[in-house]
Image (cartoon, rainbow, N blue to C red; front, top):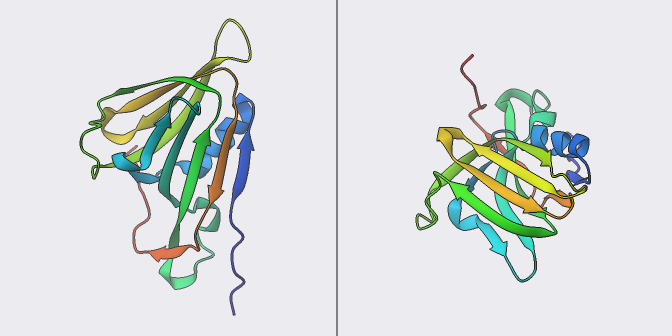
Length: 149
């Protein structure tokens, strides 16, 4: 019998930590309606279906898995979106990468989430305070994401 996988739980408080989260979230898919900015609470939360790159090859003959995950940014002072239709709540976006550019006054900066198809989000933060947590059991998926060279 296969051992159950442990849910991923990661925190990012600097650019190196954030690069680990970016790798774990590469090819995650989310609906626009699952992206929520709480201006009063200063948080941005994204619920997504994360491709489990860390389990690739361990899932047996079926090959690959996805898991429901939550990504939350704290200390958010502003969010800007480009080429993402906020009114299309059911539209699906695919996350390619997450990067951080420090401001002149550390630890503030801008986190950029880059999506397939040319969309992106700029998240202004007072400091990096990011959490990623798997919130469901994984399920088999017939497709492994691929990228053209």
